Image 1 (cartoon, rainbow, N blue to C red):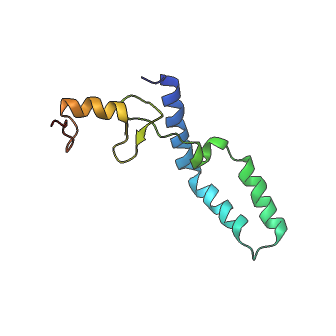
Image 2 (cartoon, rainbow, N blue to C red):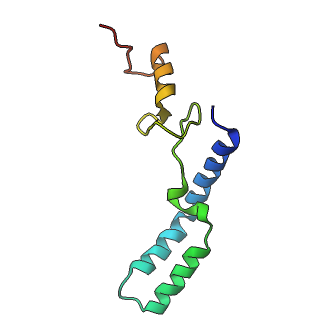
Image 3 (cartoon, helix red, strand yellow):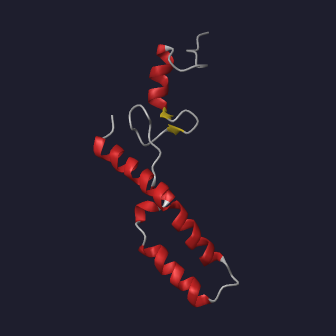
Length: 101
């Protein structure tokens, strides 16, 4: 089980990303627009840098919904390989069957 503080920090980051998404997208559009003057684009770059770092989508860490484990994460199932194996053996994951031959 992962530290509760790490899981909670990641939840706060997701919330911040959702709040900041529109502002960041608007500033990035200004920065990437080659037709605007360089001064205006530079001001937008500075404004983007002043926004909180945790507002960036790349700061989010994919974690297992069951255990909070950050590695060996399956995006489709939103859980780690270890949790998948345990729940699969118990028959709690639809479509997953313990193999035998």
